[in-house]
Length: 399
Ligand code: HGY
Ligand code: MN
Ligand code: MN
Ligand code: MN
Image (cartoon, rainbow, N blue to C red; front, top):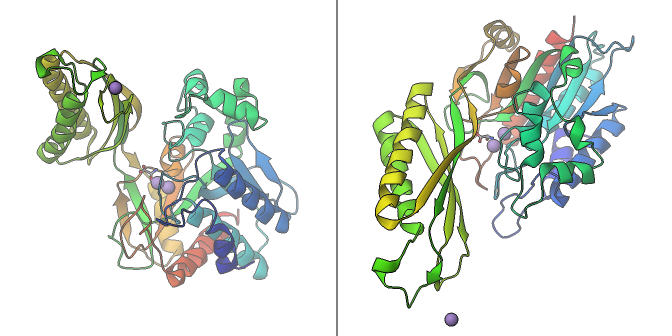
């Protein structure tokens, strides 16, 4: 099936007809439908699918001699942020299947296995930790902590894995699988507007992380509680949001508060608690750390007069990722030259780069918008991306 055909099949899955945004959270019906689509595309190509212990899937194009060592892995993720765009994740997977088709049409016979991966919970939209599937695979998160992560309904990752037919006690680093992988190349829609050409190559991922702020106050009646008697957690929460913007400007970073949970959430009830998440990223570890420290200090300062307690916990942090220079240069040469650019977005490639040589290809996004319905890539540019990925996979899988 052509790139356009696959894209048309996947496009409606998990899409909100009103906003055009996607809601494909790990192991919820829309994402399970995407997983079924993935298995169907693999079956259509007689590519056996490996389900690893961490909820990731890999469709394999094995060489005629059946070897499974020295694999060239590509792929991305199927899950989305709430209200996300169509391309972030799926573009890398659809392009990978289309690239395999191209190579087969041209009679390529790879001497190394080519795997197409769909990593679980890359956005962390359900369980709160980004790249959960690839972090577990790479040994970048404590399995016990992962098991206890909960979703908005209080279901644990362990329960959801069990419901998906996986053994929660088996999750964790998979050195056998990684030992079979020689390199990983992920194609992804550009999340920004730096690309003037259809395809670019990533140089690095900036340091980035997410922190959870808890504000504990006292629930009470909105109408009968005097201001002096209140311990309203919403007030220091508001201070924290403003402090995040100020700290980012001061430190040359970016800081975002995009998710907040208010309990009980009644119009006429003073909140008893507020939980808010800070996403902070920037050109250097120090600047990101300083941003978070300053926001933490400001939150505590704002909470004190209101008798509100503040808790701050780091949920995930990824230091700067400099992609493997030799692999990056080889990819640029294979493409006959391509712009090289950093990214402010995190990726499974960033996590895996700690374990195997990793590279990323970006496909131009004319809107520059991502994590929102306006995220876009022109079909013509996507097809250039497929050709580029096919050339890179062909080169790397030649042995
Ligand atoms: O959050 C990120 O940067 C990525 O898109 N998951
Ligand atoms: Mn994303
Ligand atoms: Mn992504
Ligand atoms: Mn009442």
